[in-house]
Image 1 (cartoon, protein in one colour):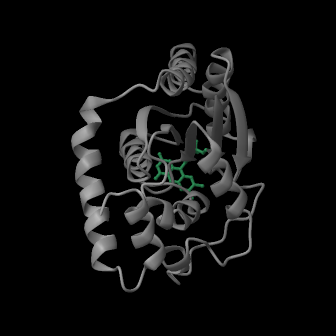
Image 2 (tube, protein in one colour; image 1 turned 90 degrees about the horizontal axis):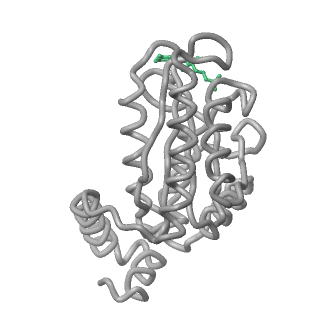
Length: 223
Ligand SMILES: Cc1cc2nc3c(=O)[nH]c(=O)nc-3n(C[C@H](O)[C@H](O)[C@H](O)COP(=O)(O)O)c2cc1C
């Protein structure tokens, strides 16, 4: 199983989020998965400029490392998205990446794949950020297997660390198993279908302006 992990912390893997992500990726490896790791501190993903080229031609004209991340995600079986809590949300680095995924979202291009989400904070609000990341995973068309988050207790340490790391490892194992077994998550089906209907409506409405996406949906026989 090929699992892509994307860490949105400016501290890369040396920070709190990287520490928690380490446990999740260890779980993936225990289950036999291969992890391809990207730290957004180590690559360049510039903000979206809203040119709509991804909708029109299926490619992004910004020349940076997003091309490699996109390719890796499309070739993956599953993926992990990790971020510290920055003001009730994710880091600007991760948000730039998420915005650049807009074309993938309109096409639900990661349908059939599985995601997991990871978050750390200084003082809480973890569920709010985890929920946001879960919605992002769903908007790409993927199932979200679960999430793990925690406030930090100091640099790269957490309260009740043993239990937290056990949950993080289990999340990694579950992600890998879900992809291997092609599991279904019936409780996510309603939201998935509702979002797909929204994207189908949007792409259909914009067919004159966004030929790539309209033709993508047509090729899938979904329009
Ligand atoms: C700009 C900035 C904004 C932050 N906003 C929040 C916040 O709203 N809530 C919170 O609990 N922690 C907040 N924090 C703390 C980080 O989420 C926390 O230290 C996190 O574990 C850092 O992860 P990292 O070491 O992987 O970068 C913020 C930190 C920074 C630098």
